[in-house]
Image (cartoon, rainbow, N blue to C red; front, side, top):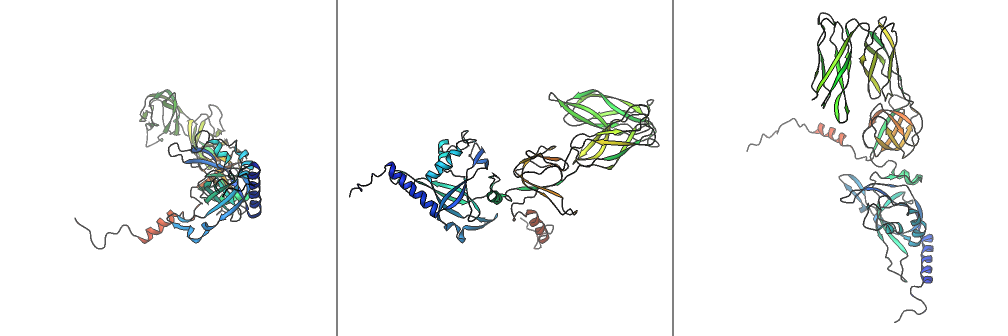
Length: 481
């Protein structure tokens, strides 16, 4: 039997009519879903695995739910990694609606695609049809699904053309992709997903407070380099002989060497006193030996000083120091001002070294002024912005920023949860928001993950140690071969 002569079997008018009917059916019987295109930034050159991608665009489109068999009880699998949900859905969307409403906005998304991040399809294919790896947000179940397969020829060329895309989707498993669509219900689905770490922050920096003690006579006032040497692979040790009447009187001086690299050659930068000692004199000069470090050629000169700064006692170590602060001493009458070098750890001054102990100080003690704090405790971090540690250089993306109302000692007043860390932040450094310019001090850094309730390896190990005593031998005897 011949085909119906009243139909042209593929005219433009017939195709437009069929497409309009399909679009109408989808708007009547379909549901609204969000289509989230994946932007690819980096892939593995060998196996072409996506290493870095993000979802920051969303498009509302109507879709027909073909089946829901994937929601049966057998889709939940208990694996060694915990409960794994493998729910699947099949959705049908209009080809015309996709090509006219979504594809034009994707023409500018070429990062990673033109450079060969995905080579299975051409660039034109990737923007004119849905692609595997994109996401579908299903509002009815408040879930994200990942497109695993796109069927573009079903039904097969009715009236000489295809009119729909069938999307086979599987429940999305988060892998630290960046999701920032500005749609709250979408972004909230992954707010607590991925490897999230917590920074306990403090706001205001605290100035260190201390006083200097004026030392006795016969201190080593300075050790200056007259030749910085070369070839050092590590800092050498500085050995200083004791004073002539030691240990009856006087105290032995000590110092450390600081190295530097210039033009690929590592040499000594300076020598700092950690204890100026006392009881030295020029009649019996001390012997200063530079030992170890793999280098050679360094030589020094020194001076014997009276009434210089012999020690600095800190009553407050401060908080929030990230650059070398300046320590100014007072109480000098005649002579030279001491040049002090603080040692900073976790944003606090832990000790003070001496480039020059100075001379001519009156009295027994000398107040010191310590400056160099940066402004902290300002601003509000923004979701998904990049924060940077100003000392470590570590970067991360903001997941949540919370100022606690409860200021009890058991809870930190400020919490910052971050993900996609490039490393570990340093306690005491200042973290700065890339967009908000917010600045706070890291008090402590929790490297535990918050993403998986089954992530309890340490707890399991401790409980296992209580059950099994690995120090005991075999109660049935030893096996001899």
